[in-house]
Image 1 (cartoon, rainbow, N blue to C red):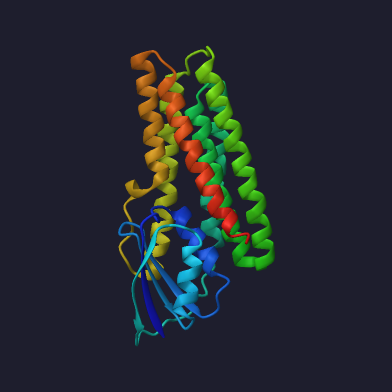
Image 2 (image 1 turned 180 degrees about the vertical axis):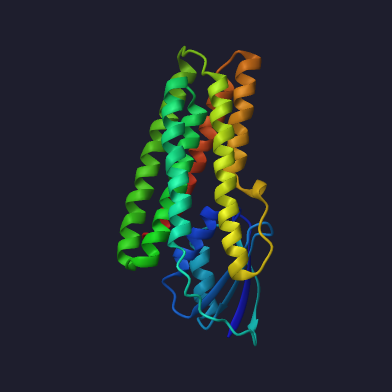
Length: 263
């Protein structure tokens, strides 16, 4: 049995964790993956070639560094617990808030909420792909990953075009109160998802759960809340457009990561 440890700088939320799980699902001989999101550390127990594992992780471009790879006497018991219920729970929460934020974003004319809704949709895709990976074939997983990635990129590009149009035009100010209230509820929803994932991970890997505020999703929620405050304070829609363009960029970045799974 080999124990290999990676430092993965861009692994800071469950989305990256699930992308890594799906990427490595094609490799035989991996017995256990232990994730520490707070420290951005991935520990693998495996019989597979460490170079094959390292190359697969490298394809995701998450800024990985191999810390160590050595033999271990640790005995890994194969886990038979089905995590589908957990994945379905976080998928439903994320998709529900995609609908809520998209609809309220359109009504309140907030590009920040619209962009954040796409980030929720991106997470829903990741959890959905994880479910497919549990019960489906590798070919099916890769096909769905390709469709999901291109769909996200299309929506994000449309959003960026709309941000540019609003920046050049004379749109009414977004409703700052809606931005703040909906983002607070989204913040709570993301906190619940992270708590559930961390609780499950700690039971499996027996390690300290990562802190909620290391998540990109929560940082984005706080960004939209701050933009709402600035919209009211400055009487300008520029803060909303700025947070919108930032989040659309993050969505596109996440979409390219998902597309790498289809190759």
